Image (cartoon, rainbow, N blue to C red):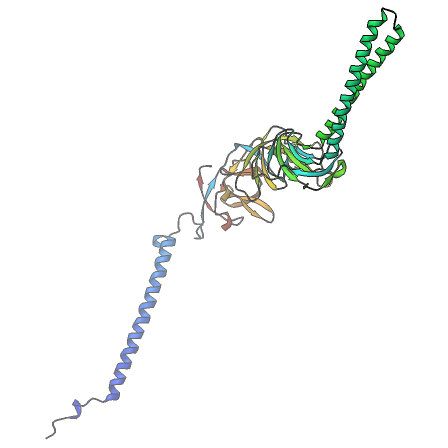
Length: 395
């Protein structure tokens, strides 16, 4: 007997329809939940920005738009050092070219190299002197001959003087012997002077340092024939002292005087050197409208003549506002700051920047010092924007 009925049987197609409907329902629920979560997040963000209950946030305009809060500083006026920036070339303060002072000849030895320290009178190079040495020996022998003649003349004079009293020799003969003796003595002196001259010429064959200092350059080698027209064979920095020949405008040069301090930094070096201005150029280049201030520096291996360097010259003090670097902006028109007007609006103010130090930027023009200046975030503001200023202490 078959006990199955029609109500107990399940159709497979009906099962597939039921599963598909369930999946569609679940998918709709997920979409609805996602939309609700997104709306809740947007409402929360709006609540955090605008405040509870839909009220305006602090610092908002009447229309409901929030005004940005900015920190402002009133710089006042501060006594700061006035510094002038300049660039120039390093050189020896006293650059001494050393050449041949005598007749010259073939160089046999060179005694020094660039970078060596020498004392006054030290031999730098030796020139061949064999001919002059032979001349000196000849003159020394001629002195001996002249002295022998002088001794003989003296002896003959003494004998004549002993015989003149007995009438064997006349007084005229004695006077002639006196003249002969004097001439012989004179010839001795002439020979001695000639020998001294020759020895002096030999001494001038040595190229010597005119003063103590540092050898900067050597332009001679052994075997080279040199003479008075050969030019400089060595260059020496007197005492090793260096200087920076700083070029600056006519206006800046007028504020510089001898004796004021300066700091020099060679290009490529992080080390700075302290010096002082020792000479200010009395003329201005008509082409560049610039003059030269010469800054003396003690010797240091990093100060190489011919190198390029920058200088900061302190030319007194100035009473000016001092702002943090973040307050000063720059564009194609130059430097400027943003100040906040009485209506809390941002106003652009063009300024002239002076010295920049660790303490801040000196403003030498454009500000009185009593204006509220935007301390930072100036790049995110535009002239005319309304802001909520919060004052901070001046740096």
